[in-house]
Image 1: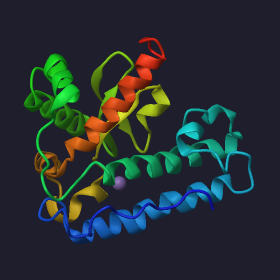
Image 2: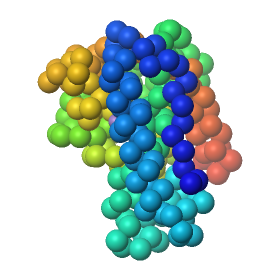
Image 3: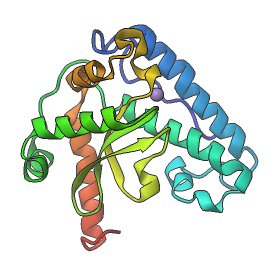
Length: 212
Ligand code: MN
């Protein structure tokens, strides 16, 4: 099977107390594993089975109609969660610095304001979905998506995403999504976000600085 569940880059209990061990076990081993299994089942034996999930999500229209929703939901789930685990770290590694820090200051005025806008996007997402910091080809922006949709499906690059499905926070925070969103910033690994920003901006430079 071409798509595989990536191991967590830290132990299940490493993000305590922000994210509890049982939530991490269920979220990674059951929810994410389920997306991977369903994605592989949907693409098995097709010419899309060996393609990177990013490519498939950007080209859903080429899939047979009866597979599109399955791949959208489960391919998006696989990609979003892979990014999510890799965006967190147990030891706070400092606020954004370098080019990402500069871009945040220019676009939002401060990290505090960026955090507020992402958290607001997460609070404003009715039902299940994600809130994102993205690079849209011109610069940084905040957005949200429903269900497991990826910003890539709109042609923008996700840099940081927070899962606001209830399965991401309900055991520890119950209905208090705002508390989860506030605490979540304690485990964000800005060094990873900065690396994604560097990749996105160099790709954009290579493309001549337009919205490629
Ligand atoms: Mn999730």
